[in-house]
Structure formats: C-alpha cells, structure tokens
Image (cartoon, rainbow, N blue to C red):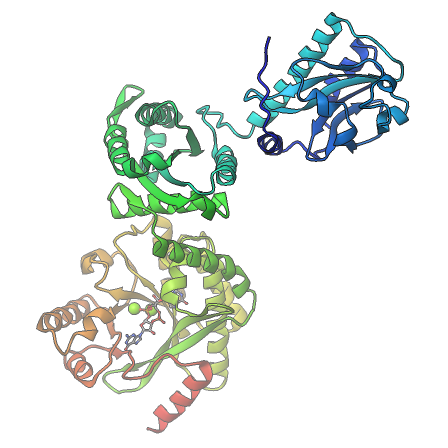
Length: 590
Ligand code: C2E
Ligand code: MG
Ligand code: MG
C-alpha cells in the first residue's frame, strides 16, 4: 500500500504537538507493542520514538536506558520520510551513521517503520535495533509495519477519548479548543464566526426530563444535530459542547451568511419532534460571535462569549443574539465579584453595615434603623448591594452573606442596648434564605449567642411575583413570627402581587417602595395610589413605612394620610454605626 507522507516539517511538528504525547509518562498500552516487536523480531532493543524539533524522544523503550537522542544522528530521522521500513543493516558500513551516538554505543543494525497519521504526517517510528549487523526479510518488515499501525491506532484511540461526546458521537468542547488554537496558529489573518445553538430552554429540558424521561434529551439531541448538520453541510464540523448545546465555526466566506443561516436553523430547529410518541416543539436560542483568529488569546473565552450571546438571546426572547462587548464586561465583572465575595466574607473588613434611621410620623421620634450592607472592593471600589446581593442570590453565597449581615447587625444591637439605646434594627434577608431548612432555628441560636431579644429586630424581604412561597418558606416565616420577630414586606408595590395575596404571609409591616414616594410631589396618580395603599394596609392591620422620602412635600402628604413611619434622605442618609450614635444623640436633644 502506498502511503502519503506530507513533507511539511512545521505542520508535521504541529500534528505531533496536538497529540500531547511528548514528554508524557510511560504507558503500558504502548510498552506492550514495543515488547511484542522486540520479541517477534528477536531484537534486544525496541522503541516507539517520536521525532521532535531536534530530538528523538522515546514514548516507549525496551532494552535501552536513554530517554532521547539528538535527531540529527538518528536513523529515525530518515525513517520518517520512508514509505515503509527504513533499514540500516550495518551502521559501521553506512557513512550517515558510522560515527553516530548509536554506533558508538555498539549498535549495528536498525529497522524503523514510520508512524503515520491518517492525515499523512509521520510522527516518528516504531523501531528495533541490534548490536549485530543483520538483514531483515520481507515478512519481518511487514510485521514491523503492522505493529507500527497498531501504535497509530493506540495513539488515535487515546486522542479520541476525551474529545468525542459519548452520547452524540460529535466532537466536544476540548476538540473545539484544540481546533481553534490550531486554526489561530495556521491562519492568524483570517476571521471566523462562531454560532452556538442552545437546543432548548433550561425549563423545557427540566420539564421534558420529568415528563418524558431521559429519552427526551436523547431525541432532542439526535434530531437537532441531524438538522444542524444538514443545514450547515457535511463539510463543516459540528461540536457538541454542552448537554444541550452545539457549536459550529463558520469560515470567512460564510461570515456574511451567518444571519441567513441562523434564521434557517431557527426555523428548522423549531419543527416539532416526537419523543416517545409525544410531540414536542423545541425552543432553541442562538448566539453568534465574529472574531479575528489572531485575537484569540484563550479559546475558552470564545466559548464563554458565545454562551453569553446565547444567554442574551434567551433572556430577550429574540432567539438570536450576537456577542456584545459591553454585556460581556458586565458578565466578567459579575464573575469577578462572585469570585471575590467569599474572601470579602472572611473578616476582610471589605464588608460593612450602614444604618438608616426610621422615624415615626406621629412623634418624629426614631423607632429604628435599617441595616444596609456595603462592599468596599479592594480593586473595584464601592459596590452597592443592588449589584452584589442579586449576584449572591444567584449562588449559594447568599447563605454566608446573610449570616454575616445577621451577626454584624446583632452584635451592634447588643452594643447599643448595653449603652441604653434601643433603635429596632431592621435586617434585609433574601427570600432564598427562607428556603434554608432551619433559617428560623439558626436565627434563634444567633439571637441567643448575641444576647439580643427577638423583639429588638425586624426582618424584611422583598415580595416578588416570581417567587411562589414554598411551604418551607412559609413555615420559616411563621416560626420567626412566633419567636416575636417583626416581619416587614419591603419594596411593596413593585411585585404587583396585591394585598390579598400578601395576606398569606405573616407580616405586620409594609414598606412602600421608594419609586412611588419619589414622584409624590408631582404625580397625582401616585398620590392617589399611595393614599389608597395606606388606607387598605391599615384596614388589613399593617403598619406602613414610606421609604425614599427626599422632600418636605412628600413627608407632609404621607403624614396627613396617616402613614406610620418615615425613612429617606430627608431624615438621614444611611450612616456608619458611630455616626448613627451621633445622629441619635442630636435627635434626642432636638
Ligand atoms: P431596600 O431594602 O429597599 O433599602 C432601601 C434603599 O434605598 C437603600 O439602598 C437606601 O440607601 C436607599 N434609600 C434610602 N432613602 C433613600 C432616599 O431618600 N432616596 C433614594 N434615592 N434612596 C434612598 P441600598 O443601600 O443601595 O440598598 C439597595 C437594596 O439592596 C435594598 O433595598 C435591599 O433590598 C438590598 N440590600 C441592602 N443591604 C442588604 C442586605 O444586607 N441583605 C439583603 N438581602 N439585601 C440588602
Ligand atoms: Mg429593605
Ligand atoms: Mg425597599
């Protein structure tokens, strides 16, 4: 059989590098073939030798201690250009080798068969050597070639495992990273467009798995990959980069067509599929990202950007979105903040609590203060809770974060009550905290530890229609109330859930969202609304707090409507604990 050997040294070395074989530890699967070669051919020394830039490195060796020899003196360097077996019957009679290291070490005979990849690159050789001159018959030469083919099969198997998705049989993300790095090296001046296809929404997957079982995802992947491959054509590689995510990399010539192509894919992928006889309509989302290959610093970044684009497409409901740098910066920042939060929680001094006074309309006296967290990040500066709390809520970090807020607030309450000051401190928690199995119990233990009465604190959380309160959350709230803790619903009016819905929650305080208060002096509509909320809330037995009061007009209106408590910059900005003490002192005098 005539085999093609590609004589492009740079590409050959790239092919070798891409296999990640050089300088790896010995492996029994290769040693087995080397031993077999030595035994069958009666040679004292046999090796699998890879031809690197300036050395022959032995992936496997029997009967020799050297790990590598200089390439220039090695017969293997000739063998890689040979079509079949390269023979040196007697080195001492061959001008090319008679003064080589091998000859000096007593080697006389050499036979090497090149290790050739499917794509035609010779990586090195399987070779046998002897300390006596020899001739090698045709049968033995064939045997050596067959054994070399076995080495290649072993290399290919090793290389395939970990690069193919076992469920779909398509290349996975590792293959994509490798291909992209390879492309960037070979064609730095070209551009590419990545197209990431999320086959269905996460909700659809969860729902499908529940109702139809694992067969649903298999069916979805099978149908979708078929559709995608048919649409992009056989010549373009399809990568299966996540359980339900596929990726294609389009050539420069296709860059202009990506919109047409993604539109076509979108239509075709929405075609109803049948899973266990039940029709399902997939809900795909696609992200695209066009880039110059010489800008690829990290292939993982390309995939991350594509994920972000597909995520944007899903969130905005547009179906297709292209990568947007501005959005990516926000993602990167969020990612950094989440990463740094754990450290900030370790008593780093980066997190602090401020206290914003709350006063009673009827008497003007301070009844309490709301604890508001602040993060002074070591490099990014001040980060507001509106930014970092939702990030924590999206991860398990909301647990230690709320634990830190509770401990900090409770130790402050303990200090203040020792000093004879009694502002009731209101602490914000996340609805996610109420899902913790023993939130109320651990809060009781904390109160105990700090020596704080439950009646000295209030817990507030933002109601939201997106949250349907689970039985566990309601249990926890019930337990907090029974302990004697006041429960307040924050930002009332933004969740559209209405008072009747809220009645299932054991809260006794409503905080009207500041967006309604801000516009009070100018918007008659908001005046009516707020007045109505106060009246209804009172009918249902709630105490009402107005947040975000910034001017006297709003303050006076709210007072005249019977609102119970006031909070806002007009009264005071959030203060450090020391400034809060000063504020309390001057308020008492004044
Ligand atoms: P919130 O609980 O509704 O807190 C009131 C927010 O309004 C605070 O913003 C406060 O500084 C601001 N504010 C108070 N008076 C005025 C005013 O007159 N005008 C204007 N424009 N703003 C005013 P902040 O501190 O940025 O907190 C934002 C939100 O982050 C809070 O809203 C709360 O939902 C959440 N948050 C803050 N700290 C924590 C915490 O420790 N844990 C949890 N889970 N959430 C927190
Ligand atoms: Mg609040
Ligand atoms: Mg609020």
